Length: 444
Image 1 (cartoon, rainbow, N blue to C red):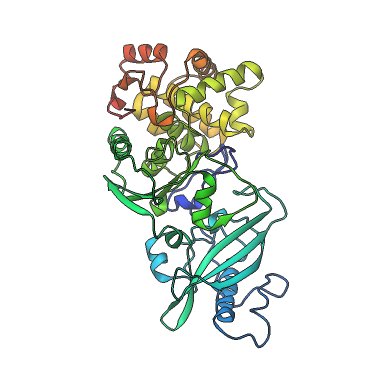
Image 2 (cartoon, rainbow, N blue to C red):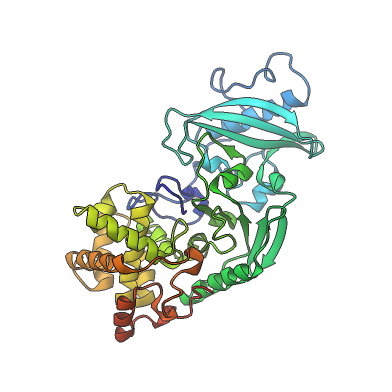
C-alpha cells in the first residue's frame, strides 16, 4: 500500500484470511466481512436513483439490468468495503470463484455513500454486454479515494437466462499483453516496452524474500503495469475529479493481484511485491507500523529507495524536534514520515535481532503498550533505549546521497547489509546478526 497519503491504502479486507491493523497501532480484523443476508429487496425510494430505467412500466434490457444492480447494491447495505466478498447471486459466478474479494472496485468506494446510476448502455466492443456507470456521493472525503464523489463503472452480461454484474478490470484490459516471468504474470498496455530484465529481477526479489523469511513462495500473481495511480483506478472502473499522477501502487494479496503506478519502477515495484510475499507472516496482532515497515525497508516507498526516504525523514526530524518514535506511533503522519519511520524500526530490529527478530515483530501488538512491551523483549532493551537508538539511526541517514529509485535499492551497499547505511552495516557485520538476509536480491 504505497501511496502519497497514509489514508490512501489498500483496504485491509483485501488481506482476507489474516488479521492485523489498519491504523498505526489499532487492531482491526482483516477480511472479517459482515455477513448480511442477500435480500432481493432493492434500496428504498430516495436511497438510490436508477431512473428512467426503474420507472413503472419500464421494459427492455436496461430496466432488467437496473433491477439487478439495485438488488446487488441493496444487499451491501452501503458497507461496500466490508461486504465486497460476500457471495451474491447477482454477480458473475466465475469472478466470485476467481477472486476472494470479487468486487474489485467496491473496496475503494466510500462506505455510506449514496449511489446514483448515471447510464446503462450497450458496450460497443463487447457483444451483448452493457456498461453501468454509477456515481457514489459521500458526506466527506475521508475515504480511500479522498473524494466526496466517486464514479464507478461495472458491466452487465447474460449468465444463462438472467443478467449478472461483472468487473471492469478484465474488460478494460482485455487487449493488454500478458507476459509470464516466474510466479508473476504481467499485464501491460498496448505498445508498452516490456522490460524482461527488470521483470526477472522482480521475480528473483520475490523468491529471495520468501527464502530469507522461510515462508512459502507466493502463488502465481497478476501484476498490472500502468502509467499512474489514475490509470490503476481507471482500469478498476473508478474515477474522481482528483488526480494523483505516478505516485504509488496497490497490492491485493488475497486476490493475488498488484498494480504498479510509477513508470520509473514499472515491472519491479518492490514495496508492493513485498506486500504480496509477506502475507503468511501477518497475524491478528500485526500492526500497520510493521506491515508497512517491512515493505518500506525492503522495497522503499513512493519511488524512492529506503535510504533516500529515511534521509528525508532525518531532515524532517531536524526541522520538527518534538517528533519522536512515540508521536509517530500515536499520531497521524503522511507516508513521507510514517513509512520510513517504520522502515527504520525494522532495520534497527534486524541489526539487533536478525531475521528472527523481524519476524517476531509481526506478532507484536495490536495495542501500543503491547507493541512496546513485545519490542523490548525482541530487542532486549528498554523502550526508552529503543526510541533513542531509532532516532540516532534515522539521523545517520542525513548524509546518505540520493540514489536511482526504488528498483535500485541499496545497490551501493553490500548485499548482506539489507539496506543499512555503511556505518550501521559495519556494526551489524561485526555482531554477525545480518547474514540471514544476505541472499536478498537488491538491484541490478
